[in-house]
Length: 282
View 1 (tube, helix red, strand yellow):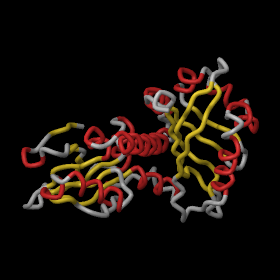
View 2 (cartoon, helix red, strand yellow):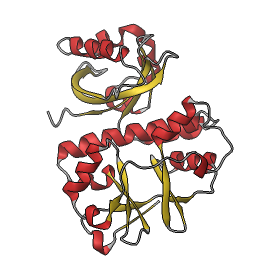
View 3 (cartoon, one colour):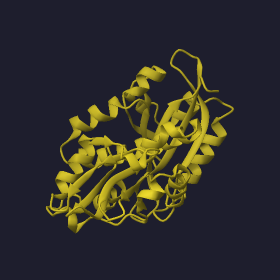
View 4 (cartoon, helix red, strand yellow):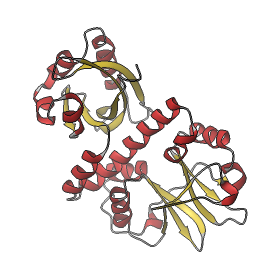
């Protein structure tokens, strides 16, 4: 993955995540996991043909097609919008399209149709305000986690663990039906003093044990609401709350959740989230 700045696009960085339409789906998924990215652009003769995103991979996995031995051109999808070189120079316009289409990246093409690369929310973080920077980072890391998790299911558990433990933030999976946390990356030990196993062993008592009493009602209400979501709902949610550190102190955290797994009838079964300590900001 290489970053480059086109002299005509000096305001907004463009990332080059371009692959051939003829590579296999499995190789594309491996690229997503190994490079810690959530989108690949598919080109042919220098022209954009489509893309493969982390959401596409999750959908293919849900359909049982993630293991298909096929070329990328067979499963690629089309981006909701393609930026031209003039639009990519305008940061406010780029932000508008990212928010309008609810995506973390959009492809950019030159006036002659040549594919230049991607404008990503991560790439424009330094150009935006702190709050936009923070929310975009949460969304990006969550998408990266989904892509990595899908790849890990094909005997890449070691790679999955190495990557998630290297991310500077708490990644977790919460099972709404069992009302317990079923996964946390190693970051939780550094940030809160608990091991992932200790958090899992708290089971249904997790929230009452570590969430501040004043914040507990809103956490329980959010979990109850998430139980009613279906595959047709957006389901994105964010919240600030206090967590008790293993040493007894209280720390402010901001978390960003989204649906991860579903019941056969379409209801959300598990959510995946990314959280960071915001005590210093508070």
